[in-house]
Image (tube, rainbow, N blue to C red):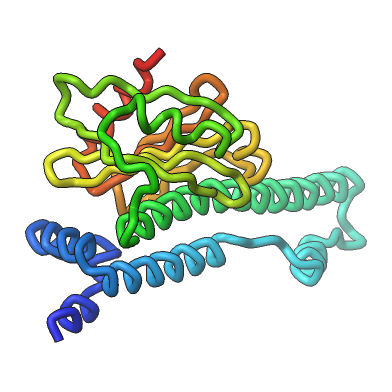
Length: 249
């Protein structure tokens, strides 16, 4: 019965429409309740699918026909006016095609962020978030050798607020990568690393942050690799951990 009170508010929680104090309480509950975490993940995926579907638009042949009929030149119009109308129609078609293309690219980019958020939530909701459990980067890094088709380095955390919990292998679409978990002030942060060319070939488009992201995120490309840092920690903590990775040789 305790979880029922949380579930009735899951939608407004995921939409960021609850008070800051209640939002923190939700965050703590979801991280410690596999049942509510599963419900949250299912609703996040449903909301992302609805958002992506609502942004797709491509002009139909019937739409083009009605546009042509509405601006079709009359018999009394001059030749120059006819050419102007034809040019206007061409601009409409080009603008519609460009808008549809950019919409598809944006949808793909936002979808990538949605999938990253889903991986973060699903991993934390798992009974075994990491497959290699260690705070030592020299233990975690070699574990990935032979499991993913690239190598990467982990930052030195000495004199920082962050601690490494371990890592696991993951997939974004069909692209294999590394998923690392860090802690900072009782918040979990996921760092996901993929091969840039494989990820771009599989997903296409730029990686565009949604207008109202569920988590703070940063992403960048470095040394042929694409990094994602995501979590419910503050934007400053996400930025600080990102900078540690960026500064790693």
